[in-house]
Image (cartoon, rainbow, N blue to C red; front, side):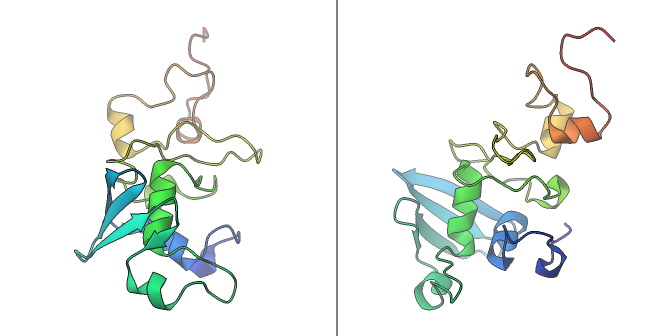
Length: 158
């Protein structure tokens, strides 16, 4: 899997914790209410309270909030992205995002649209390409389908 370097980012929307929340392998499982279990690629498990924006990880305990005001560790950011509470910036390359983002939660990851206001209903993954895409049946193709050359509207004659 490719990773996004913080230096490569053209926007201040994401910092290094956000990049890691999107690109590292993590499993997010709901435990009830707005509490989630986040297991990292190293096998560590942390509890995230999405309402209180708290996590049991050492980063949240010892390093947050940061001097620039950041209050979320990568685990809390992962929950926010996975549930759709926080949209993924439109400029983020979908191929660089962990494919299991949002796989086990009720909410759906969302991508911010470039017009600045609207978010998509879900985040397309490689699996969507095999069985069609989430945008099938919608008025417009998603960003990935559009870039892949599908620029027609569903139901329009070519």
